[in-house]
Amino acid sequence: MAVTGAKWAAAPAFLGANDSKNDRIAIGCIGMGGMGCGDSHLASAFGDIIALCDVDTRRYEAAKAAFQNLGFAKDAECYQDYRKLLDRKDVDVVIHASPDHWHTKINLDALQAGKDIYTEKPLTLTIDEGKKLCKAVKETNRVVQTGTQQRSDAGFQTAVELVRNKRIGELKQVWVSLPFFSTRGGPYLKEDVPAELDWDVYQGQAPLHDYNVNRTHSSFRWWYEYAGGILTDWGNHHMDIAQWGMDCELTGPISVEARALYPNEGREHHFNTPDRFFSKMQYANGVEMLFFGAAAPIGAEDTYASDDKIAWLYGKDVPDEIPTYNRDGILFIGDRGRVFVNRGGAYGRPVEQLADNPFKSSDWRVIPSNNHMGNFFDAVRTRAVPVAPVDIEHRSVSTCHLANISIRLGGRKLQWNPDKEEFVGDAEANEMLTRPQRSPYQF
Image 1 (cartoon, helix red, strand yellow):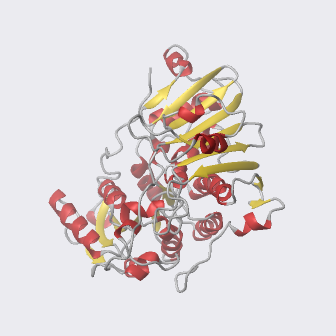
Image 2: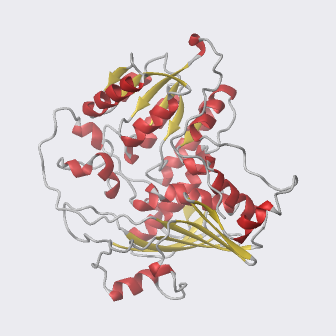
Image 3: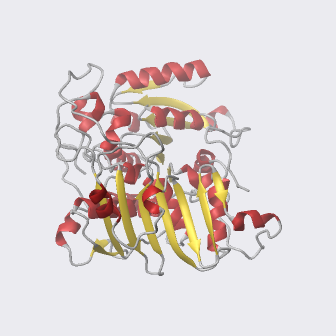
């Protein structure tokens, strides 16, 4: 038996459908790629899209044409500079889906402009950025929802409730496995910059590089200059659920040790994030987390990794099934059972037993939400805290950043103080809580 949630693209009826036209929420959308267009489409059920923005004008032109065919955003103004969109006093809400290295800067500017924000994950590029963002949200008292949609899915909610209510006994270990995406690719050499793209602005705080299309749009996440690879891209989703079930939403591990394999290691102009990694983390409550990339699906194997490298990656005392484990999701292991959950649903004997042994009125339950975008707009209207607020999602992605830092330090085991949000006795690691920012895009 599996518990599954609604389809991701489903949008309910507009909240407050009896409101007059003048009461409709006005929406501005920044970043018109695949996720930006998808988020904007969902948002259109809750307000009027009046502005679109992308540093690549081809993106906002294509988005506007598609939206017009769907019957909305017909009068939306388009901008290449997001600051002009934020200057508009009639924009109430921002739907934000830029590349990762622009997330925090745009979110901070939107907060200062008095906007509520639905922002895509991963929430930040660095841990220091997350601390700044949490502070700014508190100071401005704006509503910010992170696009970790799994929080509003019934399967994930059920799994978390089962674990938090000890239906698997005392939680001992959690496996967080991410889907496999090969980062083999390159060399990606200099190309002419399209006239429609402001390449300098696209790079923003990141170091300058020659333009290549594979540094933009959906491929940006495989470069450390702009993102954190699969560890933060999918990691923000699954780590969020793991720490939710662990009752560690506002803290993090106390130690982390991570290693990774790079298919393009040492090759210039190639993707530079890993596609295989393995990490062990310890939490103050005694739970151990294994955070790793799932094995490649059958037929998609990449043979660059030797047996010696695989042995080094996983180390000793690892469950036998981990090196060949090819499911993405979260596995909670207790002393009396297991629950596994991913976007296919929640599985395990505790799930199967729910029909005859439902939750009690005294049990801990999640805050109800069956539509992530709808929950955001409901919070905008009521000023309530949304289900994926920045203080929680900062901690989720911080744990992913911690693994990346250990990886980039050669697999060094690091001690972490989650209260102070700093490494213990490791100045080099603490320097990696932030990154150098290119002028004039620093913040």
